[in-house]
Image 1: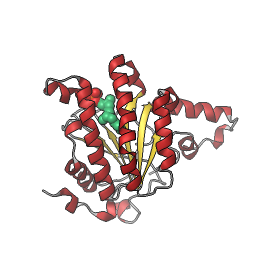
Image 2: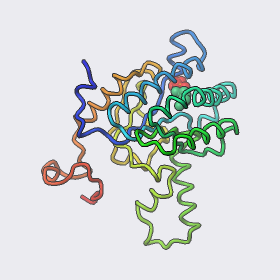
Image 3: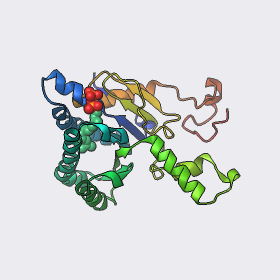
Image 4: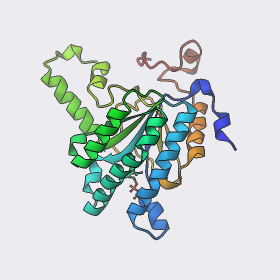
Length: 254
Ligand code: FPP
């Protein structure tokens, strides 16, 4: 089955977020150390970015390192940080050539200096690109993000009745991006793991048994095709949807 040809170009999600999971289990299945899985996960990152670009997705957010991941063994954390630096260094020409704008969300200040420097260089170099935004969630946690948004709002001295959903969204690290319409998680787990909890209020969730290093372009297209089979109702009845724009989330009171 060629899933790319099945995609309806008029209904491609603008923003796809992915929880890349299963690197450790993939490595174990090959009798290797966990980090071997992370190394091979980079190929799946490449494939997903290529597929997202070809499908016409405008924002691809990848959960590359959660705030909770700092609790992993030091060797694994160090290896992941090195992998991040080396991947950006080796891929940046390709990203630049393909019109990819590199961005980040999360508590970036926690990252080692070498990592931050490479990310900042990459973001600066690609900041004018518009083909697709590749957003790396690093040292990210949704509860941390909502917590810091509330702190900013309280500190700004705003009055109670000025607090709207839009205002809260503006204080999240995703303020510049639309909410994802599709969230993919690999490896058979069916959890959100503290990822984009506010932003995925209306997202479609897609779970696949495939372990992240095995996730390829076709798998990405398959997820989009699955998304396109869903009826997105935003709390409305099917009859109401016939007479309204199904992609509008502005009226969520119904
Ligand atoms: C989850 O698998 C994966 C991670 C915590 C790291 C993801 C990192 C990469 C795919 C490589 C680098 C990424 C970029 C953007 C350069 P896991 O270790 O939790 O797997 P398990 O559940 O099988 O143990």
